[in-house]
Image (cartoon, rainbow over all chains, first blue to last red; front, side):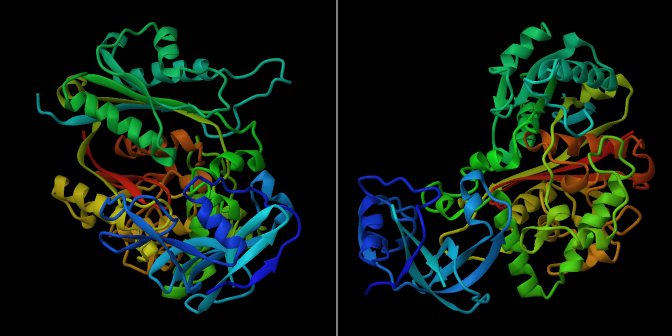
Length: 134
Length: 397
């Protein structure tokens, strides 16, 4: 299961760091894979992906690919933003409830309405990837 | 010792632009401003320097020149202390945590009199540059910040969700800002005091949809000193004071959003913290005469007043538009003018709330005076009200 790609101009305004652990998530985006971790003990999913389970505090988690399908919970358009985002203004951000019952906050493309289905896409910048809902 | 704690005095700088730049021939110095407030507050309390045994400071912004501020001030004031001298940080809750820590010093018997105080200098740094720091505070640096979330973008998403769920209108939310300005017009330490209409609010440029310039807090400098004391000490002064009747804190264990979908705009932490404060005070929302709530944006005031049972769920915007939350209305909220008009020098903002409570209890609030103000409520928050600290205070004449 891979997500659609959207070509973006230029570089990411504020690139995320990656750890030995989260690098799997960011490298997965390059292949269109949107994934997170599931606890081996209590079997709950968590996002962002973590080497620990925040629910039962187990230290054993496994990677699992997400469907990339969800529902838009809320959104806004940012007209006044931090210095590094000045070139991108205005831009939309939002909160998405994924079908796997995980809430994430992300970029939003297009004009999706609240409580309607959205799909996750991979944003391909010159220097790496981010993701968004549309 | 009754183990009750009182707010006995306070002094505050008018909210506005105080911080200078290196270009200026002379600048306001943070410690000069605060030292004078300490003396004004102690005079207001009717106490002597030697009565103080603890000072809890809000952490200054990184743009403040003097570092290690608490211990620097202990020297500047030549004030030896048996109780704690320290600085507190908890983003928007910073001043309320400084206040609570000062109260705790008295409750624990470490001090008979403690100060909660601080300076917030930030106006010399542009909003674009300031947001480079604040964007890393309100979200996950690696999984939220890269998308460009700003602190108030989370509140904007509260507003969009609220309008969607409850059918409240843009105008109803904007009426909160109009109400707060009407209060601030009577507050000599408020930052924005010119008359303002609903049309004025609606005509502003958008900042984070649907919130425009006048529905979000401006940036400002400020400084406050609050004197808290054991109630026996307060009583002996013969002055009126604010007795702390109840306090409640709750953190929902989430930062901005809960990874398990929940009702984000129920402000569950404010509800839990409020329930604890009501229970300790033996009171309900009906007993509250006025509330000075920490609400950076119009929508936040609506949501927190609903979570604290001051207005009915889904009705906060309409209640504001109908005048129920104005001075003279059923439950006056943010009589100081709130964060939009009294102003928002973030790391000391909530200390201004206790100043307002004292002004109301001592019947010195002028045109914004709540008649018969006997019980007041305050709140402060972290994140998107992911944590809340709520106090209930009672006037003792």
